[in-house]
Image (cartoon, rainbow, N blue to C red; front, side, top):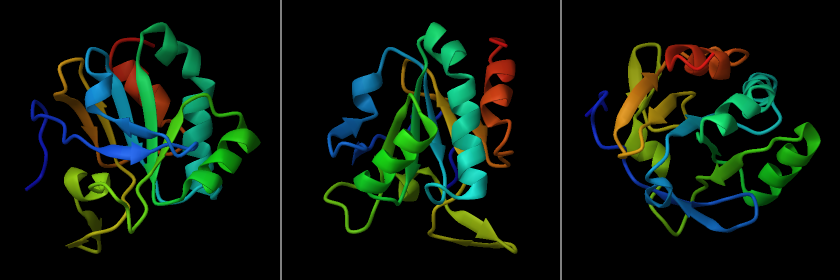
Length: 155
């Protein structure tokens, strides 16, 4: 079943770049951007992460948390963060994972009209009450952060 604006955002608890568990529920009371991406340090994923980095002050000024999620492990995330000076948290949704995977809760990947489990490049804005405020399934890696800020009237 596809998620829709106004739905409760599926909760998750995943390890960050330091191996520390982070739950979506713990961020209630503030807006959260959750963006799923395929792999650390690849061209499109780097463009997307750097766009969030370059717009970080606007997100921080408005109290918006940013969480990037991929299947890469904590060590890979730590290197990616260090290499590009990323100021936000990256979470690992690797298999096997001791907690429920987030990508399964947030939707299926689509390729050539077929849906299947896999890491998609989708972005979600979750409001302070934990409801989906915006859903982006067609992500432009080099301008996703700009688009979000504009759509929220913060640009």
